[in-house]
Image (tube, rainbow, N blue to C red; front, side, top):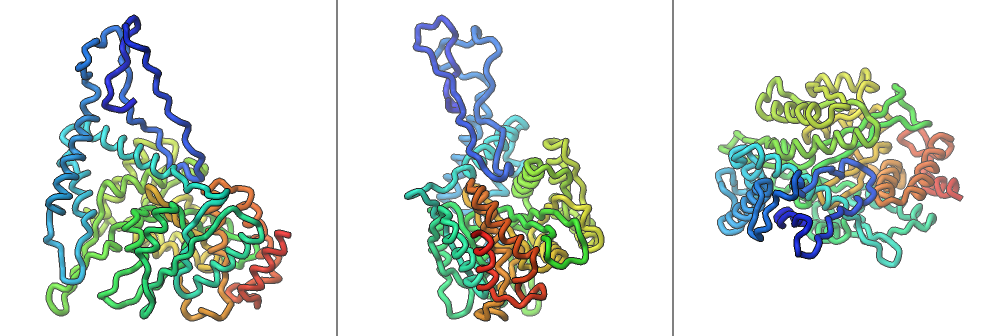
Length: 473
């Protein structure tokens, strides 16, 4: 039953009985951060005998949903016909994303003319987001098709390791390889990568190089913005056999991917003066907050810590901190929520990381803390990651190091990429394959006989991969 369809007729009516709506069971998904219990359907009348038989009868509880659809339609038409509401932030080399002007306006309090309307809008967007994210890629010939983006630097070497292991295990995954590159003199192929991921819904990705040229934008940032891949997970955990100064480390960093300092909104006003804009919106903070709390709830984690710098950036980071705490208190009372200033959080991370469970951060703070976390557990080669959007999921190492200095030397550590691929298999519901590959990888590391140079071994990338395959045998 559509939110706008009339309610069921009362018993005794001559009309044919209406079959009650039954929502289909949700698809199994690895992260409950991608689920929502909200429904688009309005509540039923307590007394069905009071429902009018008039076909034009329209009960009051449908009005918020009607206003939601009308408002979306009007703003969409205005956006398509006249473009974004402002172009004041344009510059010769950087033009503000339409999304940053349109979405904050659309979801701001100014256009929500009543609390009922606001609640309806939030529930509707949550439900649509959950429905979209549940749609896993389709199988063709019994296999999933996954977009593979090796990236730059050591990307090809470590993704080759994954392909060899998958081939040995007969994992029902077929890769569609797109050579997206940020290196000078190479074709970026970002459009091909985006089209492939839109088609396949899921990707495995190495790291693409970001040049320092001010006229060249980051492919990683553009890629995530275009696909609205808004939440990045970085898994910081000790692995047996990997040297570490501290033990019992196990926390997850949830990083907002699409705004704040990484918006790329900067320009030179006059020679020697540069202005950079940091955009933080309540809408995007709310969705990454719910993602973090849902992840914590699904994985039996009891604490979510919001990382900020609200003591200095009182409005922007203040909005981020307050929104995270508000969502936690109102919607997730069973999960403790705290906040920490980013510099204090960095100190706490290197002195007592065991206190953290789930950390949720704006973009730049997440980049810094993920590298600190990598140093705690052995280096960037041991930190898997995953990024999620409304429709797409991309799995890649949690620390975005290209490794240009060791490219082609066959010494790169592929562990982070292999464990990221394991997360991908779990997301696809291929748990048996994921468990076998993860255990074989950890067994090789625990033995310490065939490990790479970054942790004191002398094995090549190829030898390390072959050792994992031998364990699988």
